[in-house]
Length: 272
Image (cartoon, rainbow, N blue to C red; front, side):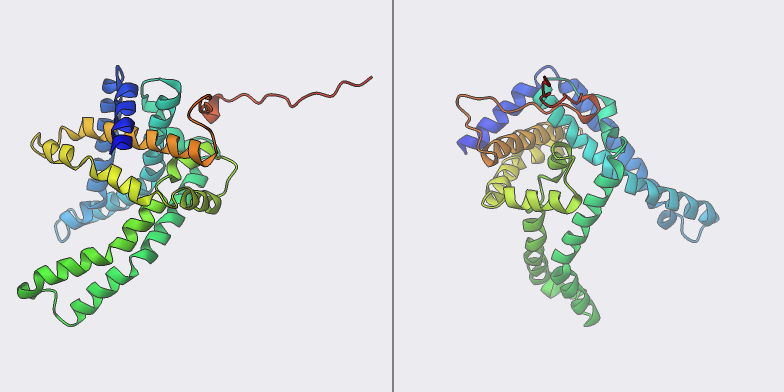
């Protein structure tokens, strides 16, 4: 627990003086996300009405936008990594980091591959639901508690897989030379022996999550930055351990944004 508290203290120290920028960034991201979800569900809402034709069009547009939300979600996480290392407030442009040249296809491909892996982990869950539905058991109220318990149990593999690949957005930013498959492999390797640790870190925010419910969800505009920055600090610490960088006697390397990096010439040979 001491390590968790240290990470949270580091997150709060980094967010000091920058809360407004991250709350604003979270609000804009959630607003865009909500709009895309509404458009994607537009066809279902107005199915069978006189607006069906228009609804189908908006649903198609919404579905495309939902795909575009993938690199935007990546950019949202990268904003915390940049702020953690460069002590800068969040900027709206951070949301579109995943759309920059050379980023979009790589980010989208990595998350699609990750989605397929998560779907495979969910096969037992979907198989159970399909079997119970085919037998007409899902509507049996007397067994509702039992079914709920089994479904939660069968979702454990998905959570384990999600924890194994939790570092993907940060590695995508830090390792531009790696392919999608290599990014997923490195995340899995780095998280070996640490999945329980990260799970406990996530659980430590449950109390704040419950309190945010009483603010009609408004509190999540502050809770999300707090959680994401803490998670970012966890990644920084884990990466330092993975690379064998001692906490004492040395600082973690600063990784600038790819857009601002300038290539330095390798050591030049002096010819006689």
